[in-house]
Image (cartoon, one colour):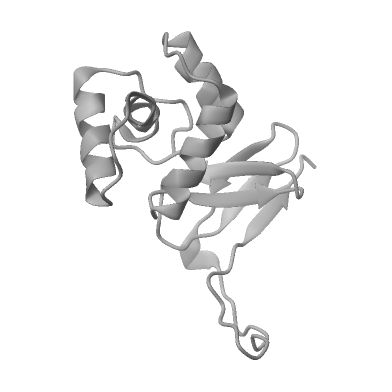
Length: 145
């Protein structure tokens, strides 16, 4: 997993355009720029709104932090990203869409994929009446020994 963002190249923009088209999202200038950073090189990554905002501004995009947040939410609602919340206030956005656990590195505040083949969940509590379990997020917090 590479969490550095993709540079915006013509190829990255095409990949981003295809990514948005898969779910029928309108390819606005801001969405295309952010999508190119997120998936332009075909690699999965975990980003925060702040890291995506900084990368976009560094690349010369005219985008506000509020637009980045709104766009990330739209990508999540469309099924393109998963939001992983750590510490109740810090959100990471994951481009890898299959169910998998994560390591949260407390010293560097990074989120990385953990090996799914080593995870065993033997049971879950029954969902309250009238609800169903949408998904289970597993975040394993790590600190240096």
